Length: 382
Image (cartoon, rainbow, N blue to C red):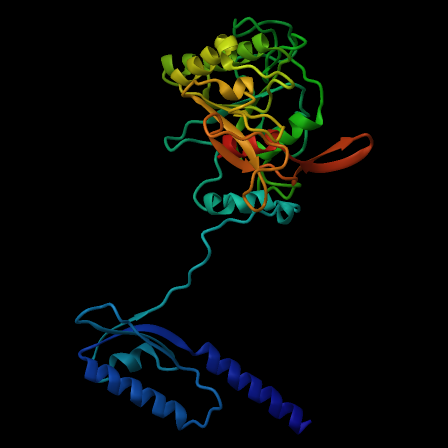
């Protein structure tokens, strides 16, 4: 019993000693007084017969005529202030990583967010509003649909404040009946086909972060307007819908419309090798959107080929408001099914298989996504 009590008292003594350590910046009157104080401190430590010194002393080397040292010891601030030759004492303060880690259960599997240093950005903002407090809106144009009631997405779906749901009336007189959240141009209706692709794009872009559900998107609080298109002209119509919203917003000084800042376009032309010269109307739609304040972000092809030799139509468009995205790996190489170009591709983002929101495919729950369709919403969300 006495041995055990002795060990406990020894541990308590060590703990109290460690807790009493003070880290301080001490300014000395001269190099001589600094040296003398250091010698005296180490001598006092040695007299305690400790097997390992608890002193840390670092004399700053770049301070010119100032004589400063960063010192950790059991000496209190008051004791340092009463030490001959000491001019000033400043205690230390703790620091942390400039990151914000969400509590979403699958975030630890989201290597893509670590790759783009999203936690570092989240330390400053998690999105949602501009610097002046305007609610940020992004259009998401998909070939197929999206699960709008997904638990990690539903809070970030844009709601048209001027439209009354399910009354079969075009309340805002914009030509679309009951367009509460975007429009399905493929089937000319206000509802969408549920689809894995669109749901994963939405999740990468703006799954609600820090809500203890599944994952975090790049932008935690973004409002997304969904569109479903299946032809180039319906793609143009979706861009026109977004451009009109932003134009009305600009003209009304924010009273009407929406502050649409970007359009995510994880779509394109497969199996067709042409230049954008034959699709100038699409290029013009990108430019009209940009002139009103909307940045268009589009996926390049999912074929590992040189687009300078085998053009991809939408990637080849030259609108200055279009950002073309290719996919990268965990090692920042080009992903093995992504087009590349020295002229048409502007940026790469994670597109190797990564984790995002789940979706049930053929009876199996799946949360993986990849390719340029996944790379693009990383850029749009940022």
